[in-house]
Amino acid sequence: MSPRIFCVANQKGGVGKTTTTVNLAAGLAQVGQRVLVVDLDPQGNATMGSGIDKRALAASVYHVLLGEADIASARQRSVKGGYDVLGANRELAGAEVELVDLDQREKRLRRALEAVKAEYDFVLVDCPPSLSLLTLNGLCAAQGVVVPMQCEYFALEGLSDLVNTIKQVHANLNRELQIIGLLRVMFDPRITLQQQVSEQLKSHFGNKVFDTVIPRNVRLAEAPSYGQPGVTFDPQSKGAVAFVEFARELVKRVG
Image (cartoon, rainbow, N blue to C red; front, side):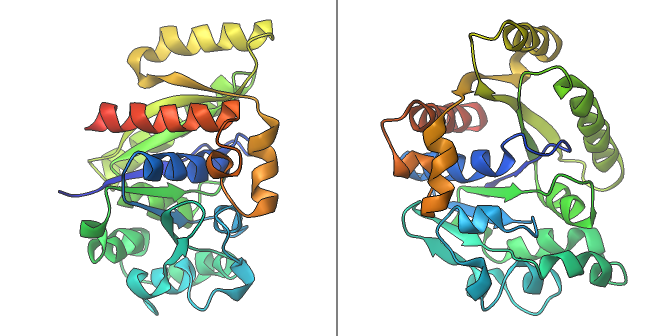
């Protein structure tokens, strides 16, 4: 069976894409899934947040995209998280320019994944906040997009941009691509506006909104500085429990 390849994407920065990627990966690993995280963000936060030193990568996603390495040799194990990582660092920022002249430039990641996909149940791609060639590589490789979003005033605006992007990629580059679901993150039920936006999301997107809600949680925010996902850093915390629950929901939804 082919793995589920999902991008975690939102064109708005600071919405918890990386937190979602690494904690969903750890949650999926805990419920018995084989997972690969692909870090497509030059900041390398998903790499560091998985306990892998981005400065010490012998080969990274950059080398894979340029055809200088394959995923099998470039990936590393997140020991604490229980999943594999194709890491990224600052070098990746230069890939934008170098990819422009390459053949099939937006499908390089898709092609590279062919060789290892039998080894995984899920591949999660952490995309940068901008719509770049890197993000396009993620969207062209994926069957679906998981959209983490905060329930705040400008969230819906950013969402319509993302939906348009996904429609364009679907029409021109990848007929499989669809929105898998919207994940409400950093949620504080005491804030009336968040409740209102949450209701708006549900009335507008219906069952595309995941049932699981990720609460605002200090332990999730602290975990990356210890080089591990919140799910393993403090398994009893509200955020960790919610991400394992979300992993179960996702497996059930796409199973």
